[in-house]
Image 1 (cartoon, each protein chain N blue to C red):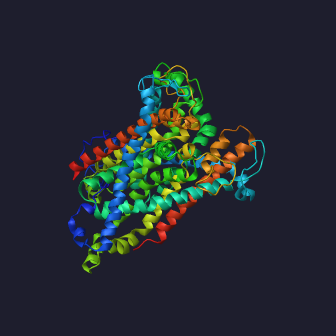
Image 2: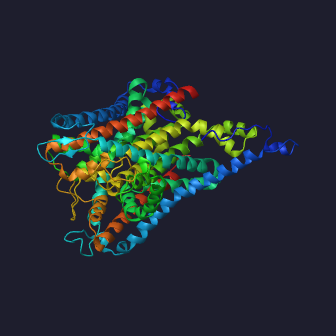
Image 3: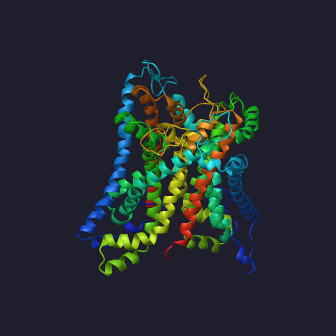
Length: 324
Length: 304
């Protein structure tokens, strides 16, 4: 039950427990292990408790609707703040990033496990893993100084062709949600690839050989044996990527132009995500009430990522119950 | 993904030799197209990697060739002036990451041991679930949590140690997951052989299971370190930038490479831009070094 893939040795049976005697060493060791486990569980509880405790006073003083308002007035005693536009920008930028990254990641994972020459598969996989090693601030400055100039013409083209559609309404700033999404897609690509690769690799050889023996082509083998087997893993991987994109801070902060104008549904507008609003405001954490407003935004982000991860896990568990 | 073809003809490749009908055109075309698509996806994924590394390397390498970059700080150097180094930031990043690892690794390894060797029932499920949640926790939320505890509740300053604490939260799940995977790979026969010789469970874990899985655990730690070193969000909230060298984790602002990059990002002047890319390159080199070390460890110390 501890792994998203395959079976867990620990589930096998009680054989190990018979060896745990009442000796001091055993008691200390199992105490340390259990204590660490309990600590991790408590930690999440503490995160929720502390964020909630410090967000509540600000929320009580808030004179605007927290979920519906677009205002962010936290400086004076007159607190007015809401997260409507933050929620939109956070969600849409992550969804666009997913839409770009997931298909490519599946392709890369299939390439690495099913198509690449055996000897080269590992070095190739390390190359993709390097993408995950690049720090997010480097993605941010690269996106800002280099990629932006290349994305601009693409945006102009899409907007001239599809500008009537609200998502592609004309562009007003250079640091757009679309640009941030592309960078986010690159950042979550290695995460999705790594997990997908792992599950594709675990496809039982018997399934693949059976497909090939029935006359399937390589692609048909992939479609009938590898993809169905890997589906829960791919979903879980995508959710992890989504969680990462929702909470990504510095790259988005550097890339997105902060606009406080009228609300726009366009992906070619600027804006702020939860994370970038907090990051942009981090220099002005002085009074508890003001900080509380940012912490409230952080709490929503926490709940959002919590929900995404929890849903992913439920999907996996249910799928596993059927496949075993 | 799974709707493209439905085969109508029973023929198959190996049967051609036996005189049966060959692969239908549609199926063979689909197969070729998908092969191209899969290869293209891989090449496409390599483009940003090469592009980013090239950009940072070509724009940042000149300053790194100067030994002052490695030996001096930015103290007294304005954005307008050329010179100074990144010693203060490199030091801060290394110290914060080291302290983070000292706290995170024992907790993470024991959590993994709990999950694999001891965990049964509800608590084990809860721990496993929470590790997943911790994996997905955004770094800025971890930073806000530490801020809420460290600064708001205890009234302490924003210092290096608070950054380390935030990094601990990000490192624990990475190390737990990699250690757990490694412990699961240890064959049960080894444990059973040990029990059969009358070795108690804790000694079996400490002497048999952990050494067998050690290379994988170290690799996980190194990768976890590489991850936390590049984190910027906790530094924004908890670790203000300082241009001077500060070796204390509990007193005064401590520089780190990500905040040095951020600091130079705000300046439009050429000397600052040069330092921006140079510090980015330094950070990448550091992270890649750890990654490389992790892979070397994985290769050489594997117990067979």
